[in-house]
Amino acid sequence: MIQNRAIIKSIQLVIFTIGLIFSLNAQTITTEQYIEQYKDIAMLEMKRMGVPAAITLAQGLLESESGNSDLVKKSNNHFGIKCKSNWTGEGVTHDDDSLGECFRKYATAEESFRDHSNFLKAGKHYSFLFDLDPTDFKGWAYGLKKAGYATNPKYPVILINYIEKYNLQRFNLVGVAGLTNVDTKKLKDDLVLQEQKTSILTPTIPIDRRTLGEAEFILSGDPDIISVINGSKCIKALKGTSLLAIATHHKISLQRLLDINELEDGLLEDDQLIFLQKKSTKGKNDFVIVTKKETYYSIAQNNGIQLEKLLEYNHLYEDDDVLSGTKVYLKAIEQLDQSKINSVQNSGTVFHKVKAKEGLYGIAQKYNVSVDQLKNWNKLSSENLQIGQQLIVSQ
Image 1 (cartoon, rainbow, N blue to C red):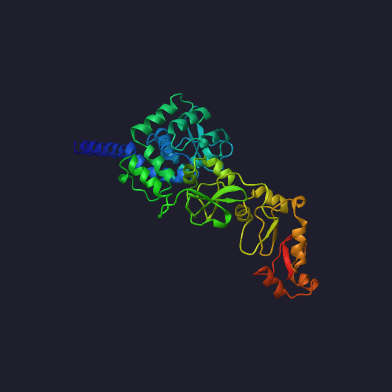
Image 2: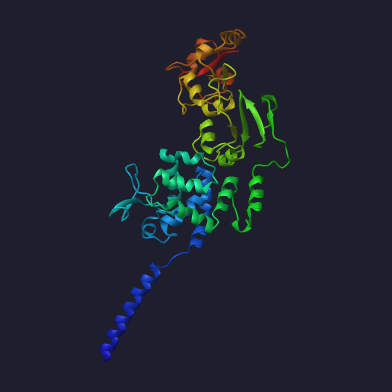
């Protein structure tokens, strides 16, 4: 009898333990908790790639069942993105439209959110979405269905219901403003949001919108101070500035702004000129001589010329090194003013184009100057030369 009681207690203990395990595994998070947990990532992705934060959160809520789906638990895949042929990462099998389909697997939820943005940005059939106003969540919702993101005919309606029910649009407004370290508890209404949105793009001292000539250009980072460089309007933007914020402020699409400035991402890595109009195919001057550390991209931006054309005129690649003393042409050879080039040479400045296997010592011997003189005239820090590099060999 005692032995039977012991067996019963053992069975009860096993049942209790199994029940506890299932209970722990069945723990869920609420929709509100999901939004709170992932809102900052969604806003960062909006600033980085331009996908509206409200859309990202609504898709995450739907596709992951507010973070509680089996797929999320075994793969951190919050958006139901399948492996496809171009996926090189890990995958997991999951039943969806068909049995045992391959879905992408991520190490963290952050990776899933980032891949979701990249997935939409890279997909040609989604490109029209990035021409929409980033706060137009209804346009995005119906656009995703039109582009084939989901087969459910009610997909856009479900996303819109999520956005309206949980006021996810407030995160769109914050994302457009380009704000960081946002405390959403302070965002009580659209008026507060609009004040914060304006502060990111308004100078401390109010300045009326105006267009300045090149000589008057003020490098302040104020988006309302517009200059004209080589016939195209531009502003000076500071490192870390959201290109989405600039695009919204000047009422042009983010994709067009990226295309004009030959950029691929949404945040600036350095202070630079940002053009609001298409750049010219040729420079105002015939050429420039590099005197400081630059890239061909920065030379193109600073002279208001399309990078592709600048590289074409100089028979270069974008990642080629730009060494001090290099002459970079801003026009095609047939467009050059030969009289100006000759006058530079006749004034006493002589240039030499570096050929294969040439070194500073040999060039110095050829022009009867010293290696130190060549280094000084061309501001060279080493004796490494690049084929095609223009060197000042006489002054």
